[in-house]
Length: 116
Length: 114
Image (cartoon, rainbow over all chains, first blue to last red; front, side, top):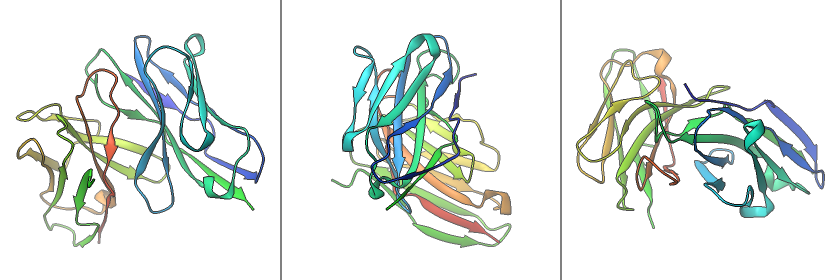
């Protein structure tokens, strides 16, 4: 079965610090990869996605992620965080084969707190 | 653009009561999903509907039933609510279940079972 691991449960940064959130997935086939963000009290919004092509993808609000196939990783990065980036971040994978094909499998999430 | 609309936004139930969570999307998507979100657990798939007329179990289906009423609407029913079903429920839709498509989420329903 597919699974997604997010290694950091809670990350606390000061404004202007750089961010990297880890995400690893267990699935050997073709994958579609996503990062979603959930601001306090709100629904999930798509930050960025990787389907194919350039493994470095850019999303909204200055976020980017790099797909490294050999490491089964899709880490999220931002060079300089802002207080408004305080939110919970979810990595998700959608595999192409298997019983759960087509369904988004989510990691447990990483809470980011940015201190002003 | 309404996107994915869920009702109600908040609900308190007593143990044993039943209720239906409603979800509708106006994006002409084929696939719809119900997830529950619990602290430290991420989002877990309850049921999904790959296309109109089909439904399948996800990771945590016990205690729930679903109905894909038409292409737009996908409801989630709790027949006999239990405190373990206290959670935030999210409905989502995507153009199709397979291939490179993203899911769009509703605002969520915060359910408390006492």
